[in-house]
Length: 396
Image (cartoon, rainbow, N blue to C red; front, side):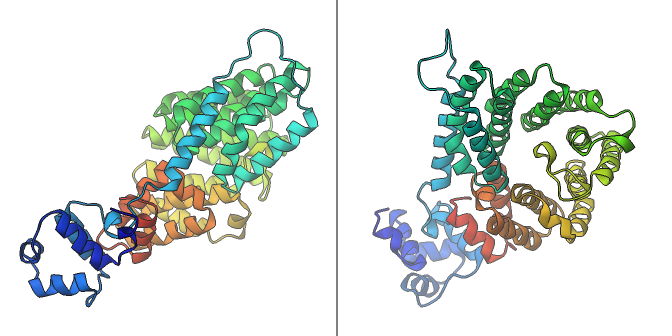
């Protein structure tokens, strides 16, 4: 359609596409099971199209997406933006330094530390496009700092951040490269290796390698587990507990209900000692985080109702609001999946709208979230807010 046509009301767009399909009003009405008078009133704007089911019927007859009918047929900016971000990160990960360091200035370690910290904060606020914009610079500057004798922990954090971001953007295979680089940067320090293994476990699960995820995260967890959990340091317990949660989620993905329950219960014991409101090693680990993991595990095990119970009781706590925005929004997407599986599209729509308000990039940039949104919008009982959001994002 021309740019001027894109501004047309819905009724005029119906007329436009009916003409494109060379259908008379009578033939179009017959295919819809309506009267010619009804079609005429719709096209002239005398009658409004406010029912989702009717919009879908019309779009099906016209052989177009509902989003096109609503005037949202342009390529969504989020998709183009995500692709460009991934390309820049891929280029940065593909740039190998061969031979002696270049003659350019070495980024001071304190500057890199501030940049890495700022990028992590943006990630935890689910500002993925902004994080993607700075990651290539971190990946370029990190090795030069290390070559100068400083900053290996900063390079580790840059690679961990990159892996987490790529999983969010649906690029698990590229995230695997970043996680592998993190593991290499962590070599020699068990705690650093454990921190890098958190992202490695996420990458493995996202790429369908649940068995490898469970094996890697369990090995790293037990390597740093304190002999007496009661005497373990909060940071140590947070890393160990997070790895156990990752192993539990991998076990759930494999359908191993017994292992899932045992591992989450073990993590819960550590979380009780750590308490709420902490973020040791970028884990946000605590009792509320563990119970959100119970919801995610139940969903993967096929028990949507149990997932909903954990979701509803956990998100009522004050500590829910202490978790990073990214963590909360990701959970809301999982909760929407659970509601859809429980045949409750209205609740699925509600939590998706909440997720979009809380962290728009979580819904707009993540392919997984867009799939959930599309599934919710296709349900004839979907609330109008979800259909409008799906149309605005070009999701169908």
